[in-house]
Length: 197
Image (cartoon, rainbow, N blue to C red):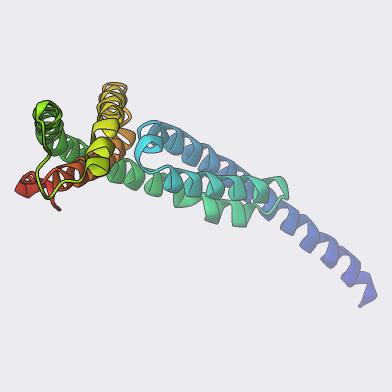
């Protein structure tokens, strides 16, 4: 019995090693495909959904680590879903880009008019001998002092948009809108309906 046991164990070990080696190539190919898909999708996605790109890259790193530890089956399992997720990532990024572009167009249509109206009101009140009863001088001076900042922020938002950084442009535009609404309210001006939301 012992005579047969040693060769049998040896055969099992050889078969196991061969099976492991045969899993290596599919795992390597799956990782290569995943890496190519992620690299193709991440350029645009980094601008709009960087956290999701990082999650995919972390998944790829985990698969590579498993490959390095010769855990080919785990590496293959981890890598095989990544190309599909990368494709989904590209679709989500495109949707996010569309949303941001729409938001920018909506805000960039009304914001310059709001800022111009505030400037005009400040100019009129600056030349007036007396401020309206519902406007105190300190608050008026605060609005007046804040106008150059709002104007600069709008220029920065436009630069961000021109540079392709939609998320930053929209974020700055929202901040400007909030400040403009606050200024208009302080000055007793009517805030445009679309700007209140």
